[in-house]
Amino acid sequence: MSQDVITRLTSLGLSLPSAAAPAANYVPYVLSGNMLYVSGQISQRDGALVKGKLGADMALEDGVAAAANCALALLAQVNAATGGDWSKLKRVVKLTGFVNSTAEFTDQPKVINGASDLLVEVLGDQGRHARSAVSAASLPLGVAVEIEGIFELA
Image (cartoon, rainbow, N blue to C red; front, side):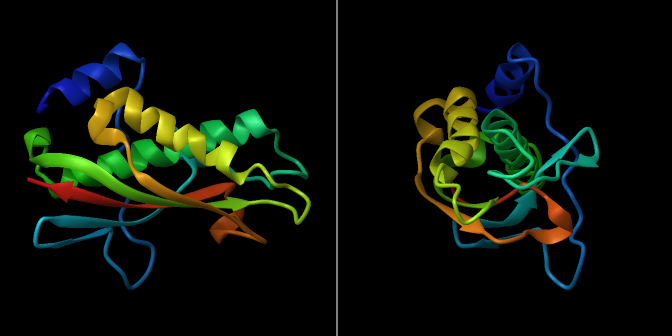
């Protein structure tokens, strides 16, 4: 796979953001054996937070885009953890997605599809994963989406 990931991102008009530094007393990822656990990545675009509450002041399509940006941030952490050697990535194992949404909003899975679809588009079958998509009354800094991921490395 190696540079295929970067080539694929470029062909989609995308690029990896810088891997975000932790904002508190935690690390951005933990490598345990061949499993890589990536801390929750909040929705950002071009360095600015993507804020909003689905079902109130944010459209579904905007939530989907926010989730896709979280997936890019997850890939940025994988890139950092592997030193840019994409041949070390075996597969995406699981995502847990949190959607800042009203009690009446029930399309959390559609929002998190933004991340799932991007990972499969970029990684092919290696991007297919187990997943949870849940509602949250609020998320840090008022962001729309936060997603954490588990990856298997070779």
